[in-house]
Amino acid sequence: MPDGTEPRPVLHHDPLDADGSGYLDRNTETLRNVGAATTGHDEDLTASDPIPMTERDEALCGFADQGGRS
Image (cartoon, helix red, strand yellow):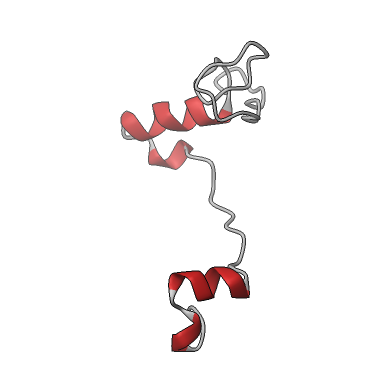
């Protein structure tokens, strides 16, 4: 955040939530990322840290038939 504080994590799928942790609530990580993405500040986006696909995920996506995802 501009003041140096860490943005709050999003805990609900609701855009706004009474506890302040919906996607578009003030000071959430998602709202910060939306602002950065829509104003051309890609360098300010939260870095991606993807979870590897499980064997089930690969099978559902059709990757299992191809020897896994590369």
